Length: 156
Image (cartoon, rainbow, N blue to C red; front, top):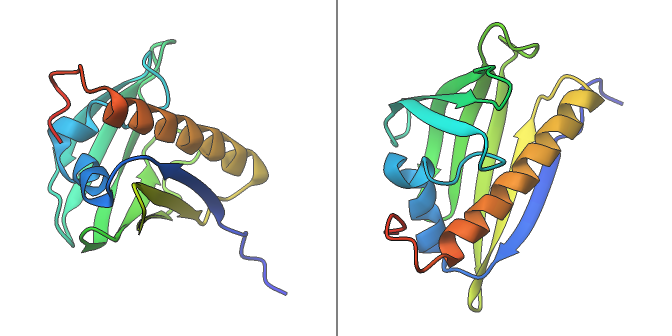
């Protein structure tokens, strides 16, 4: 038996080619349009270089005015199958300084892609629940983004 928490795993099949989904993660202009759980939470891309070993840093402006910041490094990128990144919240977030890892996997299927998010090293059940809700809602936003052909900003 181990004390290591079980990773959070979220899966969704999205009716879009995996290359298009992968591109939605790989460009800051596209990521900024959907990588947030709700439309009333705004993401600011503070640092973004989509390359293995390069850093990212995002600030979320919440409806109540809080502005949590998360950052990390892209540990590996295997286009169009997989993205692995560290995930570390900054002060004053309650999870500040706790190193986590997020893996995005994209498995092609006929006319669709299975997207799997694996979030490792969450320190508590509460943190797991909050992140599960956030990832599920973000996948909702990704589906809306990819399906909104009338959105002129959707250029992926």
